[in-house]
Length: 208
Image (cartoon, rainbow, N blue to C red; front, side, top):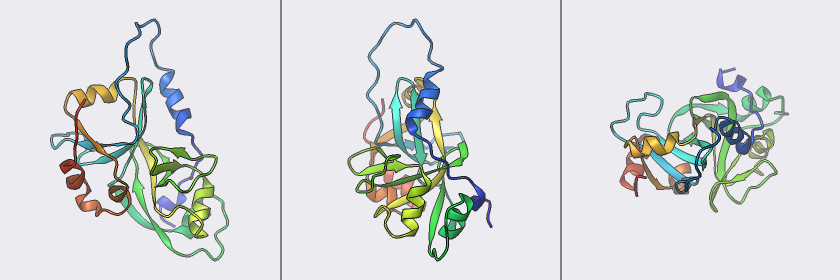
């Protein structure tokens, strides 16, 4: 069994992660108008990005508020993994399960935690609506449904996420580390990963 198959697919609510970031917020600061949320948009690494974790990455922003930000890297494929292996790794029934999914490195934070970015018609209690066309679920149930052909029409399985503390992402954008672009489901699920950064960079809309 590969290393990816041994990872635990853990149920994580994005709000919990954001709450953890919020615990680091300083108190007693003057209130100020927060910048507009980038949740549901792409972050596209600038060509000058020097951090090897994020060089030429395209990230779907899942959560962005004064407490911080969370996103899933979309163009770091790791392996094509049999669904039966993933289900076995999380203790779920895998008898008769066929097929495989492409597994991505979603970011450097908590690489043992699994997420599925998917089309919005699929919804479970653990699902978070990112846009009206994109959602995210982190539960064993979504993997089981994908294996049983009752899951979302489109999906991307990732382990780990990218995370920023309070105001950190806004400062990085202001410094020119990132551009933003509209989150197009066709780029999330169907585009060639080797050209995804180029495609997203051409569509960049603004910097904060």
